[in-house]
Image (cartoon, rainbow, N blue to C red; front, side, top):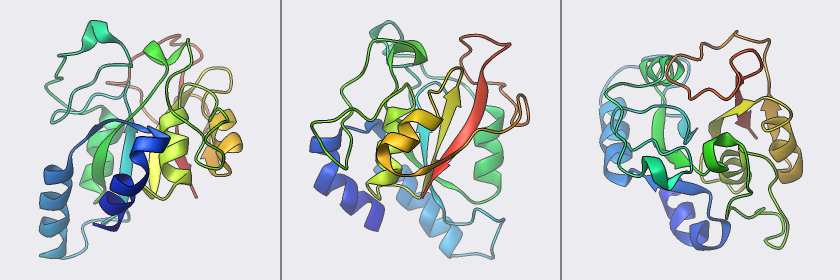
Length: 182
């Protein structure tokens, strides 16, 4: 609820989310509260960059061309995060198809500045305390640059360490899945 309250307070200015699943997040939180700890991400709020498939939310890649696209399953890494107890709050804004042009997301540290890169919605949401962590992708800095601009941490692991199944590809030989956190 604290994350949803923060989103209510700041989203109109920061514009970090392409889609928010309030009801789904609260249902998941109640389920987790009612049982034993299910994994190391138990109760962690997660923003998902809008190039990762999610079975229960639209995946649009920041493009109107995919406005009504609803995947039938989660990207492998998102399914695993849920299995480990994460609560997916919503889809974070990306540059169109994780490339260019820049999107409407603003840097929460200074709304007049860019959050930089295609994982900008993820970095802005984490930096503004809307979620504890968020997914991102990188080819040439689209993960670490937004994190640096927004004052948070990005983990860009070794290529293919985190599986890319269900993550929209730009360049299969360069794309790397990573995470942004405070």
